[in-house]
Amino acid sequence: MKYAALFPAVSALALAACAAGPNYVPPLPVVSAQAPLAVAGAPISEAQTPAQWWKLYDDPVLNGLVADALAANTDIRVAVARLDRAKASLRAARSDLLPQTTLSASPAYGRLPADQRLPGTKRDDWQVDAGLDVSYELDLSGRVRREIEAAHGDVGAAAADADAVRVSIVAETTRAYVEAASAAEQIRVARNIVDLLDHSTGITQKRFEAGRAEKLDVSRLATLAEQRRAEIPPLVAERDAALYRLAMLTGRTPDALPPAATTRDTTPTIGQLIPVGDGGTLLARRPDVRAAERRLGANTARIGIATAELYPHIVLGGSIGQSSTGFSDLFGGGPLRWLLGPLISWNFPNTSAARAHIAEAKADRDGSLASFDGTVLRALQETDTALSAYAQSLNRKQALTAARDDAATAARIVQARQREGQVDYLTLIDAERTNAEAEASLAQSNFAVASAQVDLFRALGGGWQNQLAGQTGAGK
Image (tube, rainbow, N blue to C red; front, side, top):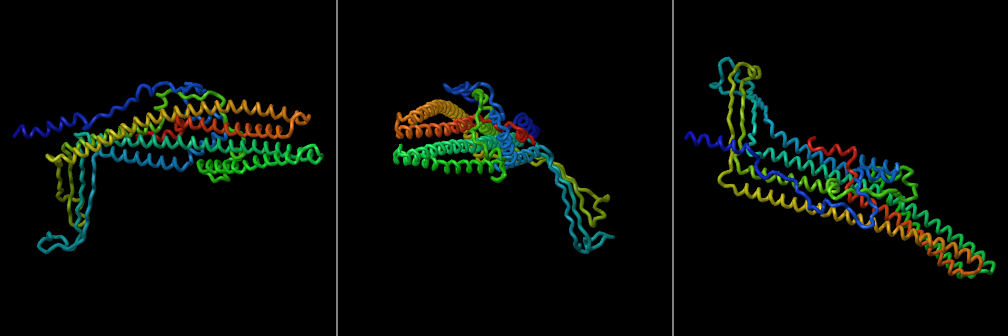
C-alpha cells in the first residue's frame, strides 16, 4: 500500500519534467532558396531592399499618400483588429497559469419552521451564504504551456497577416498613383499628337483650297486626327478610375485628394538600380512566409495540447465560507466552513478520443508544413517572375525610345521634303502616323516599367516595416 500511494506522486514529478507533445523546431528552406536573386539583364543590386521602398521615387506627394493609406485604410484596420483579438486570446491563455478565484454570495429572505428557529432569532429573516473558492491547476503535462505557445503562434501569424495587408496596400496605393500619372501622361501625348494632326490637316486644307493638294489628302489626315482623338476618352476614364481607387485606399472621398496627385502628368521613375537583397533576406522579409511559419509553430504546439489529454488533470482547490441568519451575523464570530484538496480527473483506460485528437493535430501540423514549403516556393516564383518582367519591360522601353527617336527624325525629314515638293502627302501621312504610334507606345511603356517596379517591390515583401510595425509584438 505504501508503494501504491507513492505512485501518483512519482508519476506527477515525471510529467512535470517536460511538456507533452513535440518541441517546435522552425523549418529550414532549401539551400537554393538562400541564393542571390538575379535575372540576366535585370538592372538590380544586391543591397537590401529599403523598408519604405516607395521613397526611392523621391516624390513627396506619393510619400504622403502612402502614409495616409497606412493610417486610414479599412483593410489594415480589419487586420489590426484580428491581431488584437489574437493578443486577447494569448492573455486568456496566460491567465490559466494563475490561481482562479470565485467569490460568491447568496442572500435569500424566507421563513424557517418553528422547530428550526434558534432561540432569540427571528422566524422571518434573511438567510445569507457567502464563500471564497480558490483553484490552481498543476500543469504537470504542460497543457497550459502548450496553449500559451499555440496562442503565441496565432499572434505571430495574425501580425504577419497584418503586415501582408500593409504590403498590399502600399503596393496598390503606389500603383494607383502611378497609373493615374501615367494615364495623364498618355492623355497629354495623345492631345499633342491630335494638335499636330489638326495643324497638318489645317495646312493641307489651305493647300487644297489653293489647288496644291488633293481632297483625299485632307480626308486622310482628318481621319487620322479623329482616330487619335478617340483614344483620349478611355485614357481619361482610366485616370479617373485610378484616382478613385487612390482615394479609397487612403480613406478619402475622390474630391479630397491632394491637387498634386490629380494634376501630375509624368510617370514616376526610379533613377537607380533597384536593391533586391538575396533569397534569405527575401524569406525573412515576406510576411506570408512568416505567417506560414508561425501557423506551423502554433499547430505543432496543439499536438501537445491534444497529447495532454492522455494524462491526469489535477486541480488544487480550496474553499472557505460562512452561513448566517441576517446580514449582521455574516462577518461575526460564527462558525466557518473550509475545504482543501485536489481534484483529479483522468480519462482512462479508454483513450480513443484523445488519440484521435492527437491524430487531428498532427494532420494540421503536416498541412501547415506543406503550406510553409509552398509559400516559400511561391515567394521565390513571384520574385523571379517580377524580376524577369521588370527586366523585359526596360528592354522594351529602350527599344521604343529608339523607335520614337527614329520616327521623330523621319517625320521631320518627310515634312521638310514635302514642303519642297519632293514627296507626296501619302508619305507624310504615313510618317505622321508612325511618329504618333511611337509616341503613344513609349508613353504606355513608361507605365509598364513603373507597374513592373511595383510588382517587384510587392514580391520582395517590403512596406510593412514602418511606425505601425510596433503593433505586431507578440506579447501585448
